[in-house]
Image (cartoon, rainbow, N blue to C red; front, top):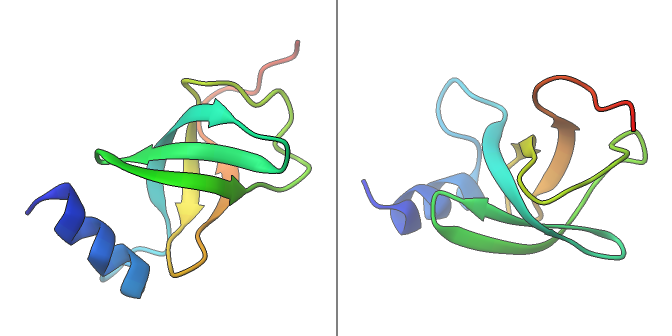
Length: 80
């Protein structure tokens, strides 16, 4: 399955059995982040205030759909 096909399925709703997908932060914007989701670029995806210290290279959990939203950062919490 290609990244475009997977993204199309994700935008139509979460994959069967999953309510989140993982994506990598490419860039931080004023109101969210730009994400690389299996080769597809998702622009200015909103994030909760609890996701502090946003940085390129972070892995995040995303609720897919027509308006994707970052739910939380994956991995250890940075204390910087």
